[in-house]
Length: 82
Image (cartoon, rainbow, N blue to C red; front, top):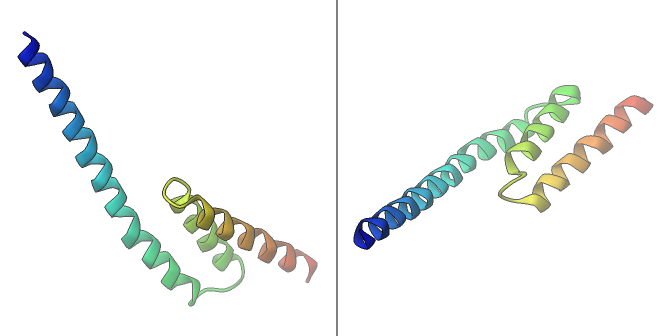
């Protein structure tokens, strides 16, 4: 019985680790694509890409997520003043 319990716990642990690693690997291609779009967009579309980048990075790289969000805010304020 104890042996079965240990096997179940280890299986759950390895499943959790593999799913976590898989999820992190999916973020990089999306963020790379969005960073590429930043150079080809302007105006509201540029701000939308900045916000999408911020959302994608919010769990894996909080500092970068905040930087993109602040940049989106600054650009939207600048657009409002024009």
